[in-house]
Amino acid sequence: MQTSSAAGVRHTFAAYPTGLALIAAEVDGRDEAMLANSFTSVSLDPPLVSMAFTHTSTTWPQLRRARELGITILGESHAHLVAQLRLSGPARLAGIVLDRATAQARLLPRAAATLIVRPYRHIPAGDHELVLFEVVDHQRDDDAAPLTYHDRHICALHHEQK
Image 1 (tube, one colour):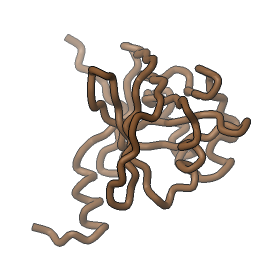
Image 2 (cartoon, rainbow, N blue to C red; image 1 turned 180 degrees about the vertical axis):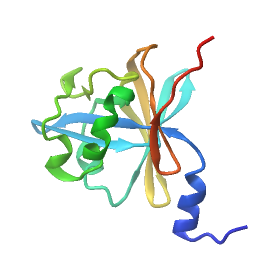
Image 3 (spheres, rainbow, N blue to C red; image 1 turned 90 degrees about the horizontal axis):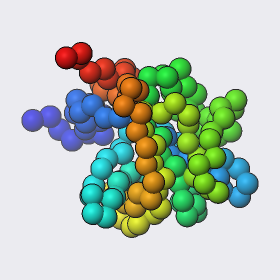
Image 4 (cartoon, rainbow, N blue to C red; image 1 turned 45 degrees about the vertical axis):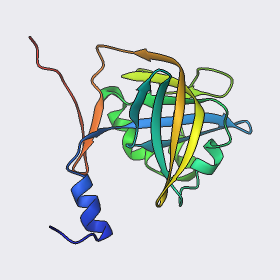
């Protein structure tokens, strides 16, 4: 077994492929958004999903104030935006138009899937805050190939043709 250094743990975690999700909302008249690869489904009844946010995040404290948020499951059409969406500060959304899904929830167009969520429970989890969200609306584009993050690489996930 490898020792549990942060770099070693990160390397081990990178063996597990995840999707890429953008969580976004309007807060105080300004769109806020951040990428996360910690999105996961939790429950069907009630419909719950989760995301984890590091305590050092400067964006999550802003988004945390929203009562309703949009989660975009990034698709292949968003691959060219990932480098920009990884940036911090105002440069992250410069030139990117988010759809106004509700008064607060924001979404990227042409997504593999979208969800409108409301915070359900906040759980301290080490150097992160784990947040459960209740899904209040959702949609999926069956033809969109989702983006995946695996071993620090981003690629689209395509189904084999039957």
